[in-house]
Length: 233
Ligand SMILES: [Zn+2]
Image (cartoon, rainbow, N blue to C red):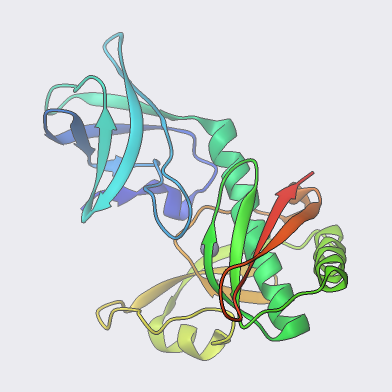
């Protein structure tokens, strides 16, 4: 198993690691800070460096271990330095944290559940059900979310035993029905006493880092389902 450095420290952008498995166009490291695609957040990109050589990481995939797709494969056993495309990753950290906040506000204000999301650096989207937001509702979600951001609340990441986590998490907020029985510890992303959600994604430390949320549009996605598209300004 690859040690996942980003699970403990979302702000790690450079790291040392050892090549433990290689293939024609991929490499597995003993540890990595490259976030693999999952949970609506895209894979990190960046590069690896060793002995004056350089290889571009185009994608990281979770397949039990983390497989890094590269354009040049370093030899087995090589010590490499990994570098993330930080601006891109940080933009997604801000967007992902904003998603948690908007999902919380829509649940609190309108009782709707988040059923999907896609995080991008420039704009992101969240799908809700059952939802039928008016323009006035969208304004309200935006305003209430920004009011919370102004409070500068901390975002904490920690692990909880399964039972304790299931007790704490509001089922309308996070759908945990497909959580495998084998998972005994959950990684919780908490917005200071307001929001608890198990999530493996990367997040900022304080809501102040978000700036302001601006909701761009809503799109109907079939019966009782609506998508909200937002950006950060
Ligand atoms: Zn999340």
